Amino acid sequence: MQQKRNIQIIEWEDLDKRKFYSFGVFMTMTIRATVYPATLIRTRLQVQKGKSLYNGTFDAFFKILRAEGVRGLYRGFMVNTFTLISGQAYITTYELVRKYVSSYSTDNTLKSLVAGGSASLVAQSITVPIDVVSQQLMMQGQGAHLTRFKVKPKMAVAAGKHRVTFGQTRDIIAQIFAADGFRGFYRGYVASLLTYIPNSAVWWPFYHFYAGSFVSILIDSRQSDGCVTGVTLVFPASFRFVSNLSIGGCAPTEQLSKLAPSECPHLLLQAVAGPLAAATASTVTNPMDVVRARVQVEGRSSVIQTFKQLLAEEGFLGMTKGLSARIISSTPTAIVIVVGYETLKKLSLRPELVDSRHW
Image (cartoon, rainbow, N blue to C red; front, side, top):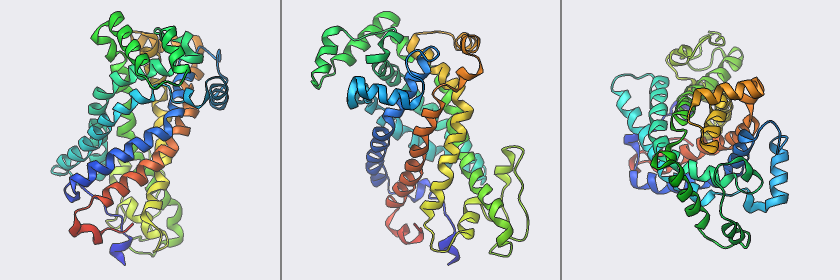
């Protein structure tokens, strides 16, 4: 029973790699298709000046739906599917770096922090060129006047007739290359790194932190259960708390599993902390995400100047643009990622380890 109630982390060496990558492609594609409309809306909200086009997330959703139909919510999606490559690169880097750090430290938070940041660095190097093109396509339609590059009229007509074509994509790529050369496809690369490396690095520690916080709320009523010994936890002042959090030698997620009913699915426990971590990480990194979107879509070259101009023109509230859309997209994404990724790892376990992990 004790073994069943502990949440054990499935490490890289426990996996059947063939199953892992096969299931991983399907999981990544499903997640991206689910949250893409929110990503498109977030991009348009971040790029617009003030509220010149949309008043908010839901206003944008209904306006796009009325003016451009469901297809309008998926502009640039076919190009964006190439980020499947970066998705696989992310999870591979995360697991390999985590394994490498394990040889130097057993601190789960440290392993997650370093692995998350490293994985994002590798993934963004692949993703940025794809994002630059897909974001230009996202802005076509109602947001076309806000972007530097516009599809040719004949391309727009073809798209309106629902012809499956990459003509718009080729047109945008040609325009970017003609205007900025190869470097144009990496416009906003630094801003992307400053956005997504912290986001990824912070997400994992917050995930464990919230799991520990749940324990601190429940612990008083279960002081004598398992390895809980009457110690009352307090809200930490820094991330350092996360790496040191344990009671009687048990990790936070293990504590959470002990405080829950014995038959409570571990996936449910893991899914609770994920959205909270995603919302927190999104809030922390949103200002840089707004700057990134403007640098890439408007063709700006300076991250600092873009930041200063945004602050001067729209004040602090400008830094929150697209935040609700980002949280709306990141919350279900976090649930799907946590449940999907943990399920993926369980399904990819080596045969001899299948019975050793509780769902």
